[in-house]
Image (cartoon, rainbow, N blue to C red; front, side, top):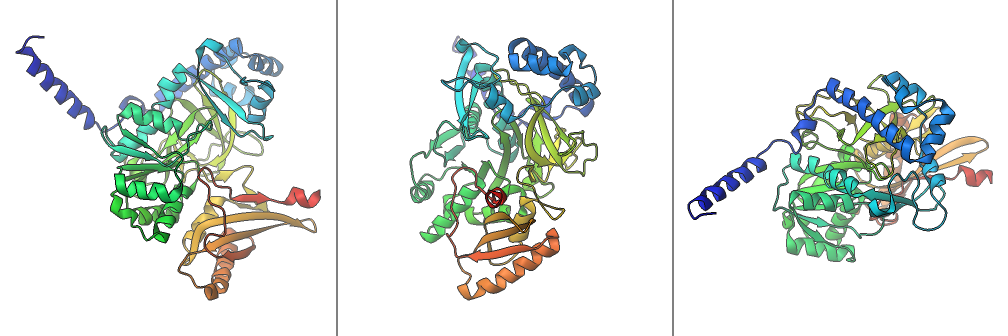
Length: 470
């Protein structure tokens, strides 16, 4: 390059970078695609992934042969909804060899393996997950960026990972996305919570990532240590793994504890590498939920009992995923997550991608039915958030007495609530839960710090009915 041309090239590159940073969307082509085109693409891609799986994964060949359906038979949505069998985590576990680093539903050769993760299985045996380079580059490095970009994060911002990196996929995909976006990464693996709080105050990152419960715990520890987290100037909190941010009271507690940063939540499922994320309108209070990243997966909702598709967008149903990642194809995969799916959302963000109104409302294995009443964890969290003196830390315990199911809640009081006020708080909570949920709860108010804290997903529901029967 000659001396005269070089300043022109530098100026052009600078202008291009500035224009990119000012872009409204991370992936405008997909985020703005109209519903008819999205649905047509989904059906075509579903047929393609079925053909791929039928040819490469013996499980799918057996499954479809038993059902009397071939990939080429799926010409309409009715064919897909009513003729194609479902898959579930126990199917993947059963297809996973018992010894060695092997993978259920694997469709790639050993030479194409790029990354391996492990998550808990339904029997306590770890579920092995394998990614190809395509899965990593085309999907894992992108999904978090959609929400982060909409929230206002840009290349050069710093992000603090309050997370111990292990074989659970957890926030690894967030790490990949941070690299893809050009963020400066600050890892905090190996530090305890006090050290992390002090490091955040020292390093002043733009963003912090963790589970919602752990972010609340960090704020709690900072208060106990008489440290002001707001002084760190954190501008963004980003999180996943729990339903907390969809509960207004939890969201407000996160803002208050961290100096009122912007919040961006992600709903993810590791096995299909599925993701849904918040748009900026959610943090602005114009909506509550997450958009499905339909570039990477197809979502729909079924009745948990009949498994028939749910047409009414106001009805809660079980989320079913077909993922377009290749290493372990998951087709009509039962997530057991309960959602309300809006296929044509319009809350001012400009995204046309489907939307889970209210986020994940619970799970089919944690949606407790007590004497005919469905009890959702998000409803309980909302009620706790509206009661002065109640903290976000709670456990639900299900028991059976004389053939009747019963539910009780153990909840911590806020640190500033005197022990003498625990009785009145218990009475208020019992009344509100009975009135708003429609079933009686036993209520136990505990002192602050009585319940366990979790760095990863919190355990909220404890079902003791099998113990009683045994």
